Image 1 (cartoon, rainbow, N blue to C red):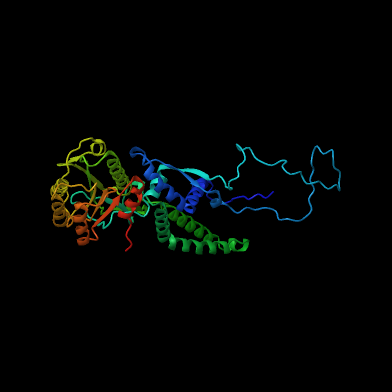
Image 2 (cartoon, rainbow, N blue to C red):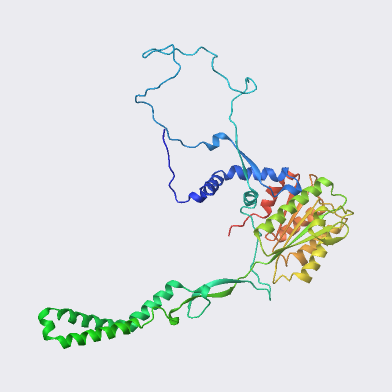
Amino acid sequence: MSFIIDRRLNAKNKSTVNRQRFLKRYRKHIKKAVSDAIGKRSITDIEHGEQISIPSKEIDEPIFHHGQGGHSENVLPGNTDFITGDHIPRPPPGSGEGGSGPGASDKGEGEDDFIFNITQEEFLDFMFEDLELPNMIKRQLAGNEEFKIHRAGISNEGSPGKINIVRSLRSANARRIALTSSKRKKLAALQQELDQLQTVDMILRNHQRIELLTEEIEKLSKLIKRVPWLDNFDLKYNLHVKVPNPQSKAVMFCLMDVSGSMDQTTKDIAKRFFILLYLFLQRNYQRTEVVFIRHHTSASEVDEQEFFYSRETGGTIVSSALKLMKTIIDARYPSEQWNIYGAQASDGDNWNDDSSICRQLLSEDILPKVQYYSYIEITPREHQSLWEDYSIVQDQHPKSFAMQQLVDASEIYSVFRELFQKQIA
């Protein structure tokens, strides 16, 4: 039997390292499972982990084993029929075959899949990989700056918690050398002369000189010892300064149609899309605000709970939501200070000539102020006037406006990735 001992230095976190290596290796299978899970889950269960299934043939690993050949001896207990040199006959057909399954089958062959679970964090990482808010520009809101602490060298003053021990000892050593170098040289010369006079004949002849040298050496030694080993002048402190840290301040407007033409299935698809968008913003952007707008014949700004779970309904006037969005932008989110984004979900139904009003509002009042605006139409039917007018807007503003159609919940993730795919410069 062969034993392989792993002597790498990451023993404490070896499981974590191996898991990350495994997730990287089977990224393709995991991303497909995550994509499939989006369409199957309920609204309240979209941010949990997921069970991933990988075919066994995809996880084959190289193994170490002994090659064929050589001489081996086996001891088989309980043998009463054979002796050394006997040939063991082949077992008769049908004996010793089969497994513990429910029964025989005449169809194909296969292997059990390898199944494992990924955590909520890993699930969200794969879900939002390679996604971003397009056209993000760093803007700083006046009067609300954030700072980062950066090291800015060494200072002679500071708090005890910031003392730099290495620099302080180096400074103390340099000071002692500078103050005592001449005395040490003189001391070494006197000591050398004293050593030469230590013979018996020299002691008798130079007794007074030896006494003078001894006194001088003691005097210099005391002067050298009086130099302090560490002085306040030697203390050095790490200097930290606050540097402004520009933040990407963004606001996302979520506009959802809740009119009577939106049945419960269509509303659930719209809610799933906006929950996916909300999770993406909360996870990837710290300084992003979200404004929720529901509309039927009239629009209103609501909180998160009412946006996703209110049962209010009515007719359809889409322009009411766009007008409210414009009003909120003018009042609270000046375009020179905020990155403004919009996402709208509807079934495409609209009242009479209101679609042309929506086109005008987007082209003239909203798109000049926003970084990016996305529209999804949730319908299996033919497109109506709203889609046609929005198509004109897309032709006029191809970089800041995008639109996609959704038919069922299984397409939510693919459409979401299409709208917010990271752009390659």
